[in-house]
Image (tube, rainbow over all chains, first blue to last red; front, top):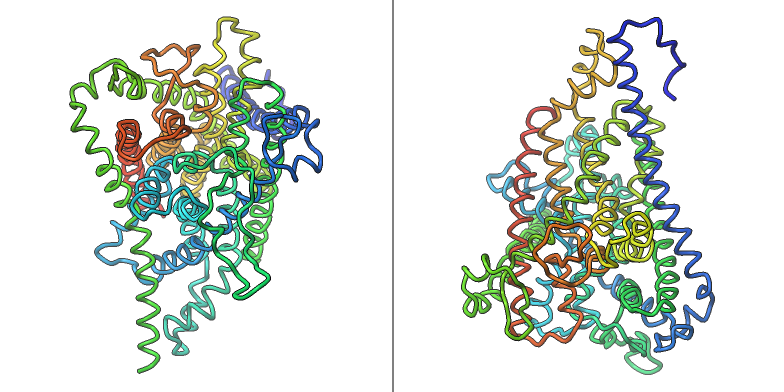
Length: 309
Length: 293
């Protein structure tokens, strides 16, 4: 597999053992890689086969129902869309601002190690813990109830570390020469940020945003904790109105369901017919997240290539 | 003058958003403590830690956290027994054996595993892996730890692989060159020179992977069942701390009821464990960084 095949008989015994050991090692590692690929492949194929009966247009345009063959994901995907939109609106500015502060302003101060620990810890906090925080803080303390608003805020806490980390990494990748040249010409810190650092690290930041989008779409546990419903047979109020003032933000206060919760509900039912719905919804969800991640990977590699040129 | 004001206001805004992010850690601890405190007025700490049954919403209620902790640890062990060594193998392969080009293709492929939502992995564990395992072990229950643990292993494999790959790659090249010059082959170099030099980075990766497995929710909530029982048997159903929280919040959970308080008490235990693991991992990583980066 690696390099030309060697005739092992010309080697001494210990050399031969070394060679064999090396081959076993590489084979094992390669088989883990192959196994992981197989799992992704089997997962996709099984989801498609199990859900193929349901994968048609009506599935996307109908509400959930007691009858598995009539049940669809309309309220679920609309809910997912609203929640993720709100999540990104909250988390992108906050995450980028925090990353810029940490990277450009708070270097080597007496409190920086402490901030590092806090941010590093946030990335490792289990998602369900954010759900508990949101249940205590947003649902009861702030009185937001189990609304789209609560869900959006919860998910934005969850994806905040992803955005912070990727933004910091891309800020760090800006060559020092660019910064020094700008400072040398008399630019202020804010000018250097606006005209050099942020434009240069744009694609890295965007990659982080896409990764967090993909994470937010698939997240289930914290939204169950804040009390998302599983059976929603209506859509949130439309954000545009025919009359003055034309926009309407009532939708953020409505109860909701999201795609992962809908499919969790279908999976946990005993009837096998509902499992087909779960498979179809899973298939759609997996395709969406794989697509988003591929975009992120593609962007990262393009960015990296640009850097090395 | 105006420029200075502008700079200060920008810095102020940025500082505020950093403050918000940092305060989340404290908000988590504060809320968990505040909501769990009434629980510990009803339940003594002795009962909480030493009772062997967990049934806070039944009558008579029992409040021993041990079955949930055992459930969490047993599924985590199954997942990590698979994921930690395999992740390490993949990391060595990626950083020591493959060319830059092959690595840039294969690493994203591994990371795609992490992209699949965990609820979908739950479906996979319950309806694909469990029936498949049952054809080998006929006495495996419909809900069991084995299948949930194995599937969770695939879920956390990418974390282990990419974190330890980063640690291995940070080891300076001259160490490898010296080892090769002394006549070691790639495997010896990787295992006897590079790995020991990166050991604190790899430990940090290990700890973060374990912490991720402890906090993983949907796979165990779907595939391991809801029954909290004090057993280490992988063929039996189990409730983990996370699965308990999810299963209880699925139903109606009135604010201030003992059920509501109990999910915060359980969450507090989980957070104390994961927080300490994360901080431990942080210090390992820092030690490693001081040395090489």
